[in-house]
Amino acid sequence: MNAAPHPRPALPSSGLPASVPALPSRRSLLGGLLAGAALAAAPALATPARATARPAATPAPPGSPTATRPLLIGTYTSAEGGGTGIGTATYDTATGAITPGPVITGVENPSYLALHPSGGTVYAVAEQDAGAVTAVALAPDGSYEVLGTRPTGGSGPTHLSVHPSGHWLLSANYSSGSVAVHPIAADGSLGERTDLVTHSSPPPGPGQNGPHAHQIVTAPDGGHVLAVDLGTDTVYTYRLDESAGTLTEVSRAAPAPGSGPRHLTFHPGGRFAYLACELDNTTVVCAYDPDSGTLTPGVGQSTGSGTGYPAQLVVTGDGSYAYLANRGPNSLTRYAVEDAGAALRLLDTVPVGGDWPRQLALSPDSSLLFAANQRSSTVTAFRIGSDGSLTPAGDPLPAPVAVCVLPLP
Image (cartoon, rainbow, N blue to C red):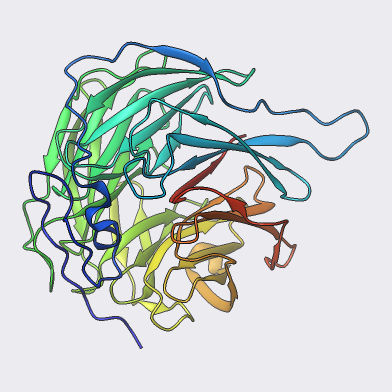
């Protein structure tokens, strides 16, 4: 049975709500954990700090098929039992076994992470009342440098992504329902915000108290930016002016009222995308026109998980399989991708091996799938078979309030 829409409490000026309502949604689960953790809006970049706290990757010896690669983990530094910065680890590219590493400190509430196309800088949201984004330079020897923080102009930023050009950082402010753009300098640091767009229409969907921008991502064509808003049941398409760093709306897509769209994932072919809808527990296949940027949602289909509060979909690099994280039953749904991306066929669901899988990520070669499990404070890994099957890989990695996992190439 599909889940009914759930209202989300408004964000007071002091931070997120001081109590934890009995809601399954992202904001309400945080409750008072982030109260009082607002980061002062920085008009200029913070003083850089260099340290060594990240395990370096190790290449495979001659004749050996295995190697280790870095893994970054997002958390809430202000939550009870949370982390102290961006967690690090390494994973075995053959077995998926994860080995813990030290912590990248000096980063507040890094609940979502994104890597620059060059691989040399990672960006983190500061998910709190005074929303911000932070840039951290990564060196091959494992050292890092916090390049500074910029305000997003909104509250509760929950997602960010880097434009394929590498010149712009895009972020979504959940609590204030807005999206922001920051320029990226040659050294990976961030400049002052160039745009801020608030989703002022259409009116909030059933049970919602306002817009809630949950994701912002660039389409594979590179010419359009799409923002998913759970509060207005809308996916907005923008054109990014790559000279000025400003967004101009070109179209809107409207999934079912009360569906609560949360996260959009494109098929590698660029003509279709898959939308995880949090509140009505569906997955929606959407047609995408790269010329106009128009997204056309289809009819929501089953996640195979009952009341699952879907979090996120990922698609393998060859476009053959898609996987969905279901937080309620703590499962992963496996879909076969058919008709060149135009259809998803539900195959099965498997236990995620943790509690409340908040986010998924694939290794660069799509041979491994990682899940960040918020309530159990673990990261679990799975090997992906030739038929798309998932086999647990090694023991879960303890990771304080794990809400994002980012395997590096």
